[in-house]
Length: 190
Ligand code: AMP
Image (cartoon, rainbow, N blue to C red):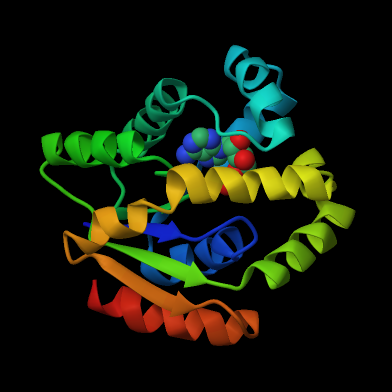
């Protein structure tokens, strides 16, 4: 199985690239942010729980997120592999994912990280906010909070995967097509 963590700060282009790469590699794309938004739209218990965290740009608690991710994987038991987009976002989530995959006799093939400077990320998010309808994209204070969460809780995962020789940084600045090509060079090797 090819199980890839597509990594990077908010606005790095993970969702856009995952949608293109899942077709090329026949992988199942799981975006935890998308699953939460779907649940919010449908006013499920999970959605109601996640909403206030998401609206403020805070991370949803680990336990809830990990359980949800496991369910999504279980629901795709015939998959060739996965592109995890927006998960893991904390060290506890990364450890839980490793344990969960090991129990299924598989593992993470690699973390592929889109590297983009912060000023460009803010510009991209504010632009996306004009059409996405996402409250967390429309307000610079919330965007800054998402970056803080990323710096405080998520950025450590680079080291977590580097220690396993599984970290691959990719330049995330350029046209969508250029970036897809750069990512493919890494995906092909994993
Ligand atoms: P995203 O669509 O990846 O930008 O995620 C939007 C929001 O969903 C985040 O700001 C968090 O509130 C929540 N979220 C998504 N994935 C996770 C995760 N792995 N852990 C905690 N919260 C998450």
